[in-house]
Length: 273
Image (cartoon, rainbow, N blue to C red; front, side):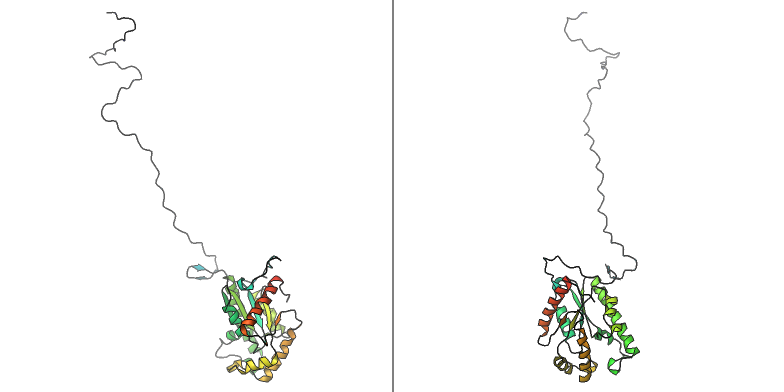
């Protein structure tokens, strides 16, 4: 049978009556269409647990807080000329020198109490008196035993100051240092604390020193003759180049403010000693 030109041809048949598929034709799927596969998202790992920094070998610790080891205190760097140094907000190491009755301890405590940064006060006399049995009282005479205990106390004060400063805490120390005794003088303090130590001399008049000494008790109170002798030897600090504060007519708060002024100048231009 012939078909007209342009009319569609019937699909070819395979044996058995099944329609023959054209090449490349897959046919319509039968049944429900399965959903398209979703891309696999890798699971997000949990955040790592916080790790504590290892503590360097030989570093002391308190609880879990690492404490840096103490070392020599460096010389404080001078600020730019246009900046006025503020000693009340600077970490400092101060050595307050003066005779018995000069008011060193009172001024040092007040100064430490009223600073805007953490500050410690270390008195050499207090540390020396940690020795109870066998205490070598200098009033009984200065000898090898009393000098050995003095050196030990000064080394202990220096160790404490370095550790305070290494942890950001300023320190003011007080000691009655004689300018004519270099063996137990400034050199030892500089060696134990460091070149950044700022020495200041507190030297009121003799009458004031005698009056203040009379208010003392125990082994802190000296005879008038001893006080006069010590005060006379302290006069050797004049001309030494160290800053000197005459607090004869100054109360403790005023003396502490003058000390701040002196330290501001010392930071800008450290003394040579």
